[in-house]
Image (cartoon, rainbow, N blue to C red):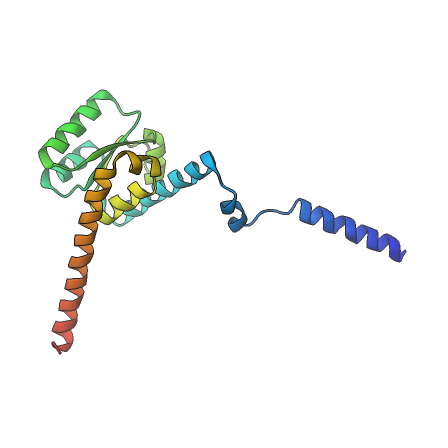
Length: 178
């Protein structure tokens, strides 16, 4: 009877360790190739959703056009299945306001799902750090558009420097300069 209990216990231990669910750490360590690409794409879409909640993203042709012409847009994103008319309008927006534009590897429906709307063919990031982080989350695009990434890095450094100066100024006003 003790032998039977030990056999049953051993059997369940073997089954548990053989069919054990992997933790997130174990899964991320074994991601390769297309699985890694899918994870990066999902992260990029989540970043766009975060940018929308932070009001650093314009969605749709008219808001993107206004952001580009006013110089607020840092990066214009176009879904890869957008129509020819949308591409022409996006290029004209970029000529007027000079932001770079990218054809992202997402469909209109995938972009819309990531942003919490039906479909989105065109969106503009109005914050350089968000734009830089988005481009870095898609390594295949970052490799193709190294010049855009360098410009966004330069803009991000300027934004961070300005924020540090503002923080130091507020501290000096509050406590007096020492």
